[in-house]
Length: 363
Image 1 (cartoon, rainbow, N blue to C red):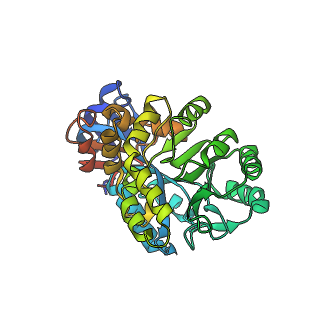
Image 2: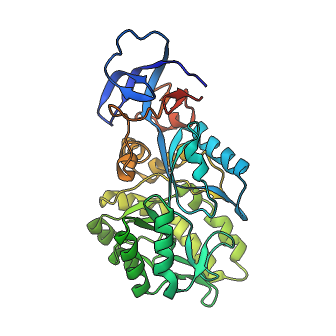
Image 3: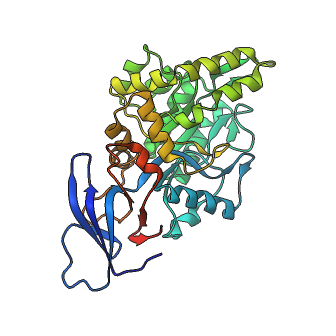
């Protein structure tokens, strides 16, 4: 790590998709575009600078079996940092990761508390598993525990029908979302299928994770209400393997998962074309490793989102959506420097030249 009094970043500073500057300075851990007078101990970094990347759907402190110890959670956060992801929206974790906030060398986390799921309708060890009558009280609990977000499990396999099905009745969803909003929190939901989406959106939800069930009939509703999606395409890539594991016991579910996977790129492109906000999230933690943010941006491009817009979905636009600054005057100096222009080729994101967090060169 470097502790120079002043850091000078020069070359091309992408303060916005079309706001390209020649240099910035970091003094006292914060960005300035005014050359500091009489700067002595200066470290210079050259290249193409972006705001620290955003992974808007990951899980620090979560493993395949549920919560993990602090050492494992630290390794998860460091892996994200090495990939240039310096702002993480933790979309549900049973672990208390508040200690991360005291570490200036770890990414900043925006927490959604712990998942709230229907009894026996989610991965064991991950969520509060409750019945609809308790949804409002648990939403209130997690709204107070999180950082302005609450995470619901909107659908999951219903073993009685052998397929994905909504977890909550409409009236419970309406009451739960209203309670979160009363407490100043936004609500997001895990949703693979089609059937839970209308109730969630019409009840005022702010975001939907995965959103593989978006249909041409539902897309205008999302666009009208301004509901964002975080597609997690690197996670959706696992659907065929999941489906293969359910062929014997749940053939209807397996076939459904394959259909969702087959149309995944069309779903994301159609959502983008309709004006639905799309953001980058990897679903790291649980079954997927951390550090996949560059791969997810590349997947958005494969889906048909223009490269600059895919880049915005993990940088300028994502930070604005989450209420955090980018490369603005006076902002904390969280940035990543690359060899070449990531707007021209998003694959550049896979190889950061330098990572600067809280004004310190950490990589």
